[in-house]
Image: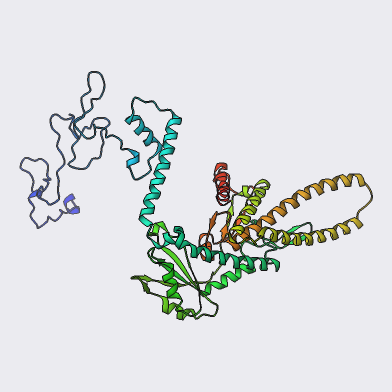
Length: 488
C-alpha cells in the first residue's frame, strides 16, 4: 500500500472562492477581504522601517498594545540645551489658574488652599503658621456659608420649624418633658422593686463567684424584666415607612386620632440621604385591634402624600450589644465617666423639673444593696474567725492586712462600676439619652433605632491592639468627653 492509499486526498469545497485560488506568482495564498463590514486594516509605516512613526518599531517609552488605527506622533526634538520644549499652543501646555476657594461650593484641601495663596500673591512668602491660620479662618467662613445655604433651603419645611422655630418647637418641648416625667416615676418605681440591682455593663457570659458570694450577672444574651416589657409593647405599634418633610406632625396625629385606642405618634430625625424624609411609629393602647387599625390607616393620603405602613414585629431574638474600647474599663476612666454621668443627670433633671433628684435616688438604692453585701460578708468573717488557728498570728496578720487593702481597692472599683451602671441606665430610661453614643432622643422608638442595644465594657486587653491603635481608642473615648461638655 502506497502513501496515497493510506492518506486519501481531502475533499475540496464545492463553493468557489477566489481567495482560495492559487496566486499566479506563487506568493501569499491568503488575500484579506477589505470589503467585509467592520474590517479595519492595520496601520502601515511611513518612511523607512524603524522610523519615528513606524508602529512595528516603537521608540523607548512609547505605549504598546495600542488599538488598531491609532497613530503615535513623532517624539519632539530635544533642544540644544537638553530641555524638552513646551508647546504653549496646546491645552496641555497651558496651566489653568487656580480658582478662588471662597467662590467654590465645596471645601478645598489645605494643599489647594496653600497653592492658591502662593499663586495669587507670588511676592509674599507665607509661613506654615500663616497658612494654617488662614485655612482655619476659611473653614469657619465656609461653615457659616453652608449653614446659611442650609437654612434657606429648609426653613419652610415642617421638620425644620418643629425643631428650631421657637413657636413650633414649644409643643414638642412640653410633650417631651411630660414623657420624661413619666419615665422618671417609672424608673424610680422599678428601682425600688430591685429590677436594676443585678445590672452589670461588663462583658460577662456566666455568673461570677467572688468571695464565695454568687452574684448573678446579666448575660449578654438576656434582657431584664423592664426590657422584656418594652419588647412586648412592640405589638401595639404601626411603623410608617416614610414621612415627607412637608407633612406636619399635627396632620398625622389628626389622622391617627380617628382610630380608637390611639396613644401617641413618634417621628425620627430627618435623614439627609433620603431627602430629609422621616420614619414614624403609631403607638396604640394595649388591647387595640391592630389589624383593623392597619387596614384603616395604610395608604392614607395627606396633601397627596401616601403613607405606607407595616406591622411592627416583635424582636425574635436578643438585641445585639456593642462593646466599648477596653480603656473604658480602666479605674481612672470609670471614675471619670461616673463624674461626667452624675453631671449629666443633674443637668437633665434640672431642665425637666426642679424636684427631680435622680442622683440621690440612686445613692439610696446603692446603700441598700451595699448594706446587704456587707451583712453577708460579716457573717463569712465570723465563720473564718472561729476556724482560724492562733499559730503564726503575726505573719498571718500581715498577709491579712495586704489582702484587705487589695480587697478595699476592688470594692471601690466595684462600687464605681455599680454606681456608673445605675446612672447610665437612668440616663437611658428617664431622659432617653445614651451616654456612650452621646445622642438624645424625644421618644423611646427613636432611641432604640439609634442605639438598639447596650454598651458593654470589654475586659482590659481584650481589644486587638494591632487593629485598633492607641490613638484610635483615645479618639473614641474623647467622644464621650466632648458630648458631656456640650450638655453640661
